[in-house]
Length: 533
Ligand code: SF4
Image (tube, rainbow, N blue to C red; front, side, top):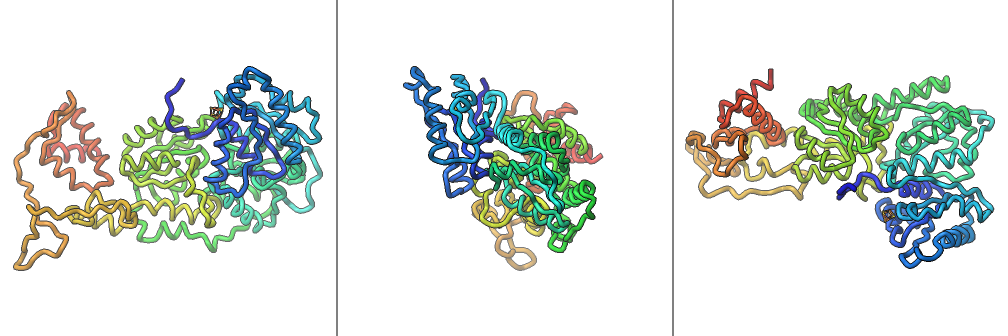
């Protein structure tokens, strides 16, 4: 048992639903208790699809358990075929149905339906959603595709895009455009947008483009084995990765890499002088391994951030994740426990979090700006507008998305210089996030002072008295924890808010290390000098 409030991934049958819903002509008969139809909402509400997923649930109830649930399944499968006439069917069990062991594959096989029926064996208690999608797509390719003569012109399949995938719709369009420039047409893009008949003719393509290893690697390996098709290993996320991807495609096909960078703006946007303030910003990355590994490269080499933490929730990709983190001198955080992620973020005290919907909540709690780079995502990350993550347009989208939550350069200076201002104070947050704006009352005891014969302009507070005697904190500290003296605390507040957390933690660590019980202004500066060395 594990106490869980948030999960990064759903059960594996949700992964199978993502494959079935992305396709047409495929039907999924799912042995599941009443209530499991909640998963429909993921597709009709979050992804805003205009039709129900092609899933028939057996929806058994408590009273059915004493009777014949196997017959219930058989009836559902027979009815589903009669009603939807699919080209192929997948059958499987959800978590609860797995426990009653009715064997959907064997039962459906006995019905002898006039279409291919592919049984899914998805271990709900060991594996999760991405595995479910990968395994389902893999089983479809294994059952339906076969070696075929290659097309005359050079074609490829695009693998891994599914329903409910983060920006999958637009990534496929963007990558199709990139390949088109090189004279490569797409034979089949699957599962998203394909039919079982398309899966049958996948063997015609010269090679496969694996866009999402989490949901397409099993199929890519299967097609490599059965149809002799090589597949791409570079995921075109970011400018450098897109260029590498095009070179990889060139080496697979013998074509020359043709690139149209006329609409690529990220390199100049991040080189332009207004982006100078982004240099060295501390960023924490979390999500699925593919997006995090790609994001780290973009952050470090294309925008100039400092990657201070990275990790993923999908253990299947722990090895490449660890290797990638090592290149940044980091130890990868591999966990599906959001509380561990929250602790790691708090300890790293980044200025920006790039993560999933969960990290957005964590960012809110910790007061750290956040942008979303990976599933799981909510409805706002299925936008109406064209917003790929891959290719050159994807790089443009990424630049805007990541920079947006940060405080603008000039505003950052204002916040630092006028931290007593009623508008530009530390807690106000970026001005373009109206909801966060928190106008301060200018306190009576700090009236606008007059200087050099004239009043200060509105918004300027009187100079503060910083000569107050040092006095210990009123609240009782934890035993053995260093105490902040009042003057040191005031000095700490002069540090810009986005690095203050880090400075506070470093100073406390330094005090503990040196056995200093009370943190004075001197301790603060000693710690600063210590860490600067
Ligand atoms: S069968 Fe699985 S997915 Fe369905 S309600 Fe039970 S635990 Fe949730």
